[in-house]
Image: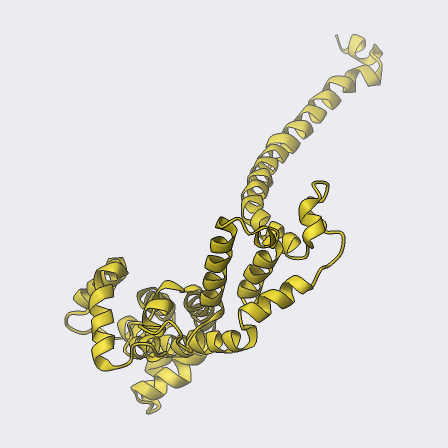
Length: 306
């Protein structure tokens, strides 16, 4: 038997081994192993992500592309994505109609002021929940969660009446005062973010600060606040974006009873512009129906600061 094995060509002996090795390589490439994901799994994951991303990106690409089209491009059926030229007059017309500079600055103020107080107050409340044990702590946490679950429509009318009696209806104080007292827009979420962050800080640091003679406020400002930079950035971004995009409450509280209130931001101006556009288009105004590019330019301007 050994002599017959020796007489066989070496290539014939190694051929089954090579075939098995190649099969294993193909199997690992397609289906992966414990250390590495396979091609089929990666292709499925990336394909799903591309499809989901396209759903979100397509409206944005369409908006930007249409905003640079002139009327000839809108009438030309061969023009789908790329306009024949960058027609900037659409942005000029939209900015003029929306009073861009003034509305932009007021929007920054309306969103920025409550955001500052949201960060500071929510950070203090979250720190208190995370670092101190007191009676009724669980009850307070439950009330905090319930205040977030409770729909804003339930308290909208009482809040409106309260602001009207206080004389702050139609001013930016309708956004600032709730943030000062820890009831800003989506404040419970921000409190929970700071709560979870401060829970991760070792108590050894605060205990060492107490041994060195630091009080509660000094420990908070010298140790907790500098360590909470990631949470502060997260809360600042979310709070500003939510205040910026909040058009209904802004129109209800900040503008108030006056339809000509000076407290208008870009989002409200876009809403007014869109309402006027739809009204004229419904009457069969040809010039308005061909101004879809101006409408897209106005939408782009309103989201550009974000």
